[in-house]
Structures are given as structure tokens and as C-alpha cells.
Image 1 (cartoon, each protein chain N blue to C red):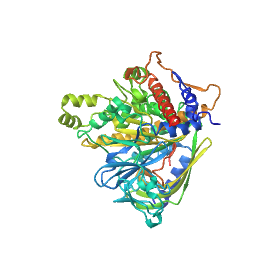
Image 2 (cartoon, rainbow over the protein chains, first blue to last red):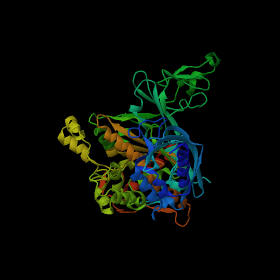
Image 3 (cartoon, helix red, strand yellow):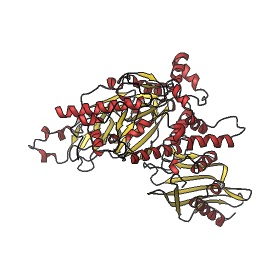
Image 4 (cartoon, one colour):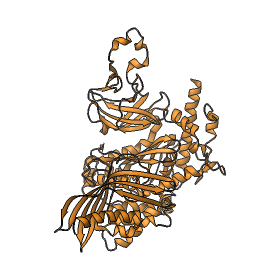
Length: 157
Length: 444
């Protein structure tokens, strides 16, 4: 595991989302992973401070399964998304331990029907190596306007 | 084409015993009349005293579309004003909350006001000598709202004078707010966090109605709650403990019979609640230490009574929802006829374990956030209704379930929980306050 592997991993994760490969996407997550979208600036606590999302693998699986549900009416028509990533910055790298942290500036677009919404922010990843493969332990999404009243955000940033 | 302005009879005709005309949801003129008459003549929630702990603290809110400002004065009293400078109308406070120090200073021309609203100073004041300034409203400082009331730390304002007093307007419905407060062993709630905000492209009343609509969860939320149950059954096989998350989602799939027996209570003036004998909030895991602290505070009998009251959704007409057992309130703020801002606030039960606060925050992001799958289910229905109502095929919305022609308005009653009576109750109140205020306006 080296610098390039980590950066490729980040790009690949976004690409799987853009191609709606939900199952392959979720397999990138560690069993103890969390997907976190804070609701406060430089938030430190996901449990006793409010968040937009703070979900474990079970809840991410619920979301992914729901997207394909026969009676998921908010996905008729289906949403699509697009990630435009700046080059990920490595904020930590321990090749021996197989761990890395990155911070990636992004513009995210989600569209459904005639509506298109655009979001800007930073994605932070904490990665670990399991059986020789990188896995996401924590993905944190900090939006620049985390406190604005959004309409539906149905996919993943 | 104005057809409703100044025509209380036409507004009245929009509400029948078991139906309402679609114009209540889609007509811009009706929305303007709601802003002009309904919201200013009813008691509207604007905030909680725990958001104003210190002198100089302020919060901003809206009543209908009108900006208001609540402050804690140096002597500890709370004051509520229209949030506009008496000079040019500039909003005095633009942030949701903050501390202004000893006075407010308008950022445009530096007119300043004490935290009780009185005019403190105007720069170059000699320019107003002999102009008669003291004879006009501008000299009185920040305009106070006609009435406000701090009820056990809950702040409500009414912009128009007259009409029903706070007690007469809310009556017995205050028992839900009481219950939420009493769930704290210290009898105190605290707001510590910013609300979750969620923009809805639908009329505000659709959200209010949905709160006591108990025939939609097992249908509209099959996609979210139903999937949560299915995934947990598969992934959680062998687990001894149901995660908090599954405990929060799963009850949404309760069958019709559950909601029928859970019951519904209506009160006068459009207030009411689902979940009388039972509710989807009744079966969450106990949190260690809490019950003992409640018994210590209230005695066993009273503690059981407080915790045994598991009301689901209580509507404080026109636009506030209170969920006492999970310590959440939701404010349905009208922006336009087809646009509603929902702000969902979580309270901390002072003196209770952190776990309650954790659960309330979790519930809020699961159900009330723009990222919430339950929220996605609901908003999809509201948006489809907002578009569908443009159809001229049928101009009436049906609210007939379990209608009884002997049904009285403005009474307290407990009925079958799948009744649409609370929706009928809300529209009765809507008609009453809309036309009452319109007639008053015409007489004045």
C-alpha cells in the first residue's frame, strides 16, 4: 500500500458511486465503518452533537437496498450523481500499518427528474488495510453550507 | 384575479365537513391571506428560554413570514419585537441567535436600542429637532409584538391584539408540553443544538396533516422502515439486542390495528394528537438509572404516570409539532404557497442520562433530515400532492375517514386512531381563525 494506492482508492470510490455500483461501493467499507455528515462547523462529536448522517454499515445497507426497492417511490424516477474531486491530500500515511487518512475537496451533483442540486465541501477518509485491501473506516463529509435547509439528498457524497 | 380577499364567505366555503378545496394548498391568494390573518391572530411558537440564558442573548424567528426577535434584557426579562429597525426597516438581528451586549445597534444608520426595545440613541439627533419625531412610531424603539407568553420556557407570540388568550387558545393541549418537560427529573428542558433544517416544496398544511395521518406509515415508509426491518432480520440474526436504530425505524411498520387502538385525541382550536393509549414511541429500551431518578424526583405513582403517557405527535395549531417521548419539536414555517421550511429541534432532558439526548438526535436525523430516508418517503408524497392538486378533475381533498355526522367541533374527544378527525379539526380551526380575522379586519 503506497501513496498512489490510496489516491486511486479515493477516485475509485467516487467512480463507483457515479456508476451506481452500490454493492461494490459498500464493499469498500470496513465492518465497523461510519459514514458521517456533521451539522456543525469543525464538529468533534457525532453522537451528542447533531449530524445530518452518522450511519454504520447496517444503515448504509438499508439505504442501498432501499434505493432498489419496488416501493421506493422517491426513486421513481431514479436519482443520479456526479463527483468532481480535487486531488486527494494525504493527511496521514503509515505504509507499514496499512493506514492512511485523506482530505478531498469536492463538488457533488445530485439530480432527479428535472431537478439538479449542487453541493461543495470536503470528504475526509480514514482508511485501514484488511487482508491486503484498503477499507474505509470513516468517511466524513463537511459541506460548506452544512446548516442550510436542503431538499432531499438521497445518494452518497 | 382576486376572489378571496375581503370575501370571508368564499374562504369559508373552501372547508366542508369532510372535504377541503384544493385552493387551500395551491392558491397564492389564500396563502397571502394566511400570512395576513391566520398566523398573526394565532399563538405561534418562536423559541425556548434556554436559548436565551444570559442578558443580551437573542434569537430570531418568523411568525408566518414576519421576522421577530426575542431578547433577554439586563433585568432577566424576555422581550419579543418585530425584527426591523423603526427607521428604515432593516433587520436588527440577522443571525439565528447571538448576544448583542447591552444594546442593539442598527448596522445601517446606528440607531440603537436597549434590550427591552426602547430607543437608546440616534446619531446626529439634532436633525430631528422640531420635526415631530416623538409623535411617530419610530421614536418608540423596536415595535413590540402584540402579545407573547413564556409558558414553562416555551415562547409563543401573537402579532395581532385581541382574540383568544394563550390559555384559551391552547387549553388542555398544553399537557403534551407539560409531559415533555416533566420527563426531565429536574423539570427542565434545554436546547443545545442547532436544528435540522429541511426545505419542502409543498404547502405547509400538508406537513401538519401528515403528523396525525396514521394510515400512511405502513404504506409510504415500507421503503425505509420496511427495508430496515428486512436488513436487520438478515444481518442481525443471532443478536441479543436490537440496535437503537432498528428500534426507532421498526415501529413505523406497525399494522393498521395498532394505530386504530392507539387512538387519537382532538382538542379545541385545531390542536390534537395521535397515540393516546399507545404509540410507536412506547417500546424503546429502558435507559439505566433514569427511572430511579424519576421516582426520586416525582414519587413512583407520578413518575409512572409521566412515562406512561406516550403520545405520538401533538399538533399545536397552526404549525408546531411536539413529540414528547423523544423530546423533539418541529416547526413548519411557511415560505410560499408551495414552499415550507421545516426546522426540527432536539431538547436535552436536564438531569437525564446522555443516552436520551443521543436517541433524540438519532431520531431527528433518521426521520427529519434532508438525508433521512423516512423524510424522502414523505416529501415525495407531498410533492406529488402539490403537483396533482393542479388537476381540475376533482377540486376537493377528502378527509372523510371515520367521519361521524354528530361530530362536534372545538371539543375534546378520544377516538379511533386511524380517524382523519384531527385533520378535520385543523381545518375547522383554519376556517374559524381565517374568517374571524378577515371579518374583524373588514369591521375595523
